[in-house]
Amino acid sequence: MIGARLLEGCKSCTKAGRKTLYRLTNSLPYMLNRVGVRMGDLFSRRIAGYGVTLPMYRVMAALWEKGDQRLGDLADMTTIEISTLSRLVGEMKRRGLVTRTRLKDNARTVAINLTPKGRTLVEELIPIAIHFEEVAVRNFPSKNVSDLKTVLAEIYESLNSIEPEIEEVNKARKAAKARV
Amino acid sequence: MIGARLLEGCKSCTKAGRKTLYRLTNSLPYMLNRVGVRMGDLFSRRIAGYGVTLPMYRVMAALWEKGDQRLGDLADMTTIEISTLSRLVGEMKRRGLVTRTRLKDNARTVAINLTPKGRTLVEELIPIAIHFEEVAVRNFPSKNVSDLKTVLAEIYESLNSIEPEIEEVNKARKAAKARV
DNA sequence: ACTTGTCATTTGCAAATGCAATTATTGTTC
DNA sequence: GAACAATAATTGCATTTGCAAATGACAAGT
Image (tube, rainbow over all chains, first blue to last red):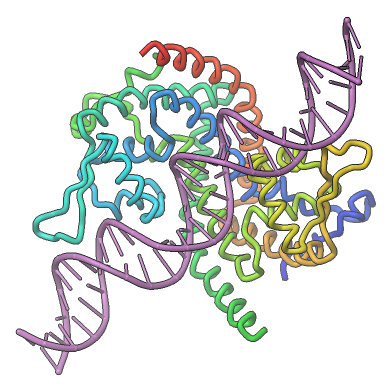
């Protein structure tokens, strides 16, 4: 296993023998998750007064950017799991923010759209989102921010490519476990 | 409102009049969240075969890095909300991964520790985490990765500093809403 | 000792999430 | 055209999450 040499029990943390030591708090998944969650939390509280949750905002902003989407496409765009999204859209429909209509030529699929109420609301929220981001990164050169976004997008793509690899390892592990 | 000029209805998206246009999918909160969630999902599935969830792994890795922590400190370190963590630790105790003992000199606080079983498990998982990260970023120069980590840490700090500012706006909004 | 206040954790509740079925519709093949 | 597979969305179930309120334990002042 690559990296096994880096593993060192925490009792040894005080010893100076090893150059590199694993730290959860310095791992990329942890750091990404932490910042992402934190930013989401803050923005979520920022918009809570408008009576919408963060996932609802994301659905509305996605629909504002590109309307008349099918549920599955909206799930891809928002990266909200489709079963979650299905229920979320149901709730948003009850609140009069979106419409959900089954297509006539293919009754399997539904088309989601913003209502005028939903549109008004999201157009009130988007400037807040823009301002929020400006404040969040106001201490950083804009070059750094755009570089960051580039890297984030690249890593996201990279993750898609390693997914099959991971699934394979998982299968092997699962098979090994089934024997236990 | 700063940024209001950037707001443009989606019908106008086809027009070429505006230089900048808001896109949810290009906003920093969205991109961070997307990558963080995706990476978490993949790693979560990677370790699912070992019978632990991702939050459980994070708790164990945090305890491995620094043992004998109080619940609140562990919440800070893992950035898991304390009420969530309380329940999570309860479940982990039932599974024999950690111990939770109330201090004798201050019965308000509890000390959380890894059990030998928990320690064995996390020491099996950490090399997997290291390898996972290596694979996830293997296409990127290590300089880029370390720069990324630096920026992520800085943004996280920056968020802490803007929190009071946001809370203040929220309060104002809340007060305005109470009048409705 | 008795109220008051603060601190650390836990619980109640409502939402969001992921996975695994299930339903409903459309396509394909014999 | 009847059986079967494929597609799109929904539902059931268990877990995770966050906020707010409640509990339980200590601290201070009177």
